[in-house]
Image 1 (cartoon, rainbow, N blue to C red):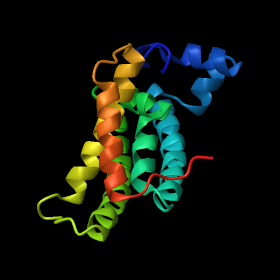
Image 2: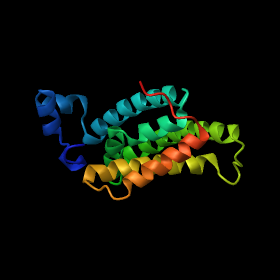
Image 3: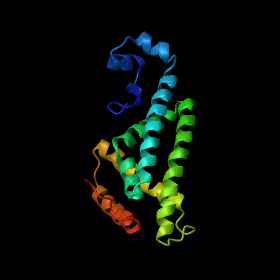
Image 4: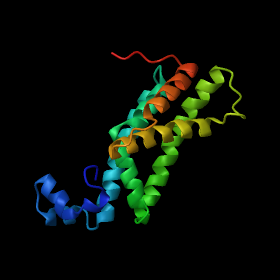
Length: 171
């Protein structure tokens, strides 16, 4: 899906990549929706665990940016595009998005309150959505070869995040 988009992810191609016969893929996943949901669940659970660990550390806002900027963000966008055509995926994505967003919102709320920011004026859910969305858009555009404004966005976000938490140590 990352290399050629969701339309290229067929049972035959999945089987070829896995080194098995297409019949085996169909045995375990009678429909492509079941395969897509299984892949989404596995990746989303891993990402939730990674996110919980990262947001519980010393630089949760920087980690929020980093996690949403990662390669997984591009795969997430492919799943979202596919969900426009697959109800089963739409339901799964909505459930995971709520869990992801709740963790990000809590980390943002803690950081904003710790710095005396009026959370009525700057709602944590809005601020976390801005950070996460910007990170995903930059990652998506980079995948398309678009770079205009990215340096400025990254510098702006770094200033914003550093304002509310010290930059995490990078080993």
